[in-house]
Image 1 (cartoon, rainbow, N blue to C red):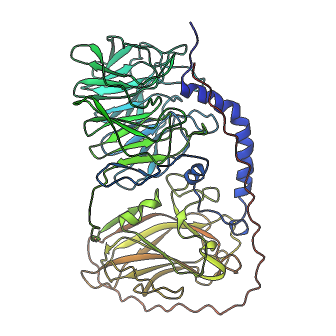
Image 2: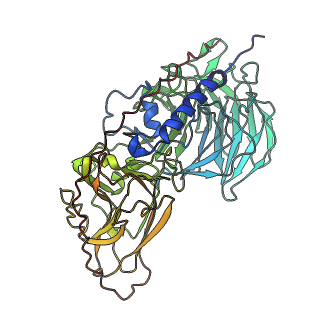
Length: 597
């Protein structure tokens, strides 16, 4: 028998061979990135996923027409991950395992919130490291079976994660050790079709009875397959494309659960081994897959036995899975791109209605924001405007975790501003406004902020409030405040070097002297005079974990003091020499994937 290897296993071997090169590159980049931010420009505004996208990934060429579900970018996975599983309880996505850029196999378990704060949260890791096996959710538990271990060997482990208890247990082992198989839930049974046994592909079909914790062997598939797309619709399993000893397949095999028999469906128009897949709106979706990776979405209608094409993904990927979230969307994290490196990309397929009017902002009494995905802020009612004079090259951006990580969540899950908000010698005035809030006396705003470990230049941050409803009027010049005339907090107004915390520190602001029934916004204003690349002040700050809560009881109002900031004397600084441009490292070589037998 000729030994066969799956695409994901071959790619893992390639990762090991390239590990030493990546380590040297990583050390170089780490040493380079930890230099003082103001003396190493520009920085901070390119998070990891963006850098990946500059390395030759194919993007969707045209906008998607309205009415068609559309793929949108979401908060990146906290680590690069090919072969990580993804399952949903209808509200959150649970993803874990996989292997990264350095060839490390993970046992991490993460929860992603695609319907609320869009953040990733770390949960209890699984007992073993694994990749190349999908998972399902049933009655408050995640079931992840088999996959490859850190030694690249298939396993027969049945991993069971209890969401409520945040703990793992083991179920009865699978009859065979397998990876790269179809994993489908239907009516309390988990079906395992095909896969790779360490030597070759298999055509077996097993069923795991969750309630009884037992396994049953069912009718074999017509062909041995690994890495297909899959799903269950109306009592039938659909196993689409994948790989076999002769190469990539365009087949569609249909298993009737009631009769324990297999039939053929319409061939897949474009073979897509190692694709993501999910059942959405009663149809089987295949997305990405193959090599070079596709961005294509292929949709199978089981009623008409026909295929159609959906919108392209933003990033061409293979070696990943996907999961449906309720009846609303599909989430697809991780995978590998065209240069064969694992990625941290995360996309969500959402509805794209026609002619939907822009909703009027509704005031809220509760605000929780962890800045996991700042690209979503505008859609959630936040507003940004940089009035710095002269204007620089950066605005608010995702945190640079090489300078310091987030207070909580993913390493870059905070929002940041820096000296490059202005140019030359500048008055920096960069505004970040909350959504419209119910402003009640006694309500509190809490947030965390900090600067770099060893600041070389002073920073300053103000908190201001407007009671003019949804207004975003912050003026147009650096010294104007528009409707945000009331100053609630001023951190380091005297510009002392150590006046801004260099470790995450919580600040609390209590609202008072507000007329009943007021609505408006709170504002974070990075306000630094004599700042910019050649000024004496301004460096780099981060903001994280913002919470606003209305008061349960209205206290007796205390008049808000009339605060007039003391003008900083005009100083003619001696211009500092312009920063030396960063030397871009030589890109890593892009390996040629191992050919399939």
